[in-house]
Length: 92
Image 1 (tube, rainbow, N blue to C red):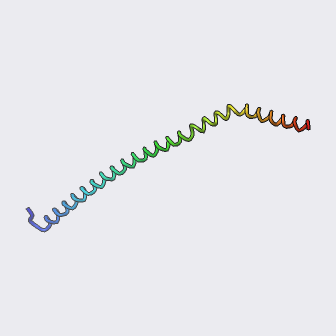
Image 2: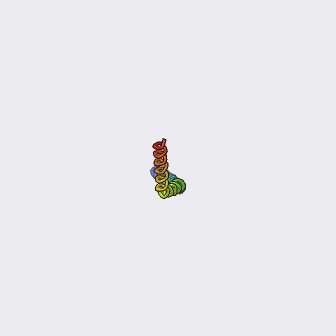
Image 3: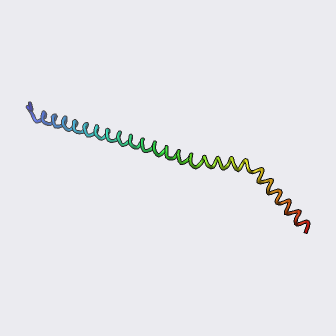
């Protein structure tokens, strides 16, 4: 099978390349697994941020709506108070 030292060299080179290719395949497989896990983690983070955003913005929108509806009544109340205070001070 091995007639010369060149045959042994070629066989050792072929085995070395085979080991290198297997190592690269395993490395690529683990890199794909890591990237897939990172994708899952980033999706969970995105969902959490969306939940937090909804939890914070929805009550703020509701409060803004309530304040918008109450504002005319509050302004009217404040105007009446100011007017009554002015008339009371004029009477004294």
